[in-house]
Image 1 (cartoon, rainbow, N blue to C red):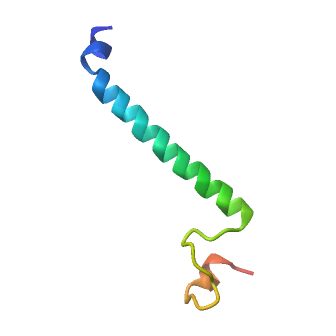
Image 2: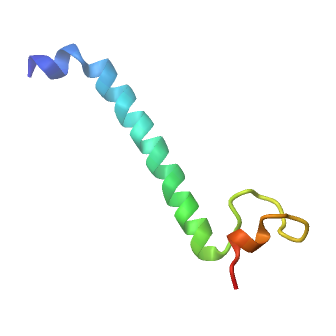
Length: 55
């Protein structure tokens, strides 16, 4: 119990960072399932469009 009390600040910051990263990953997965691109721009003039959207 003393370990938790002595390191409560580090534990809280670690949890906040973990939640933020998990939220970002969840959003990326949902966007990928909906067919949205991760770069935020259109694919019409993108030289890498063949890599992202294989037919």
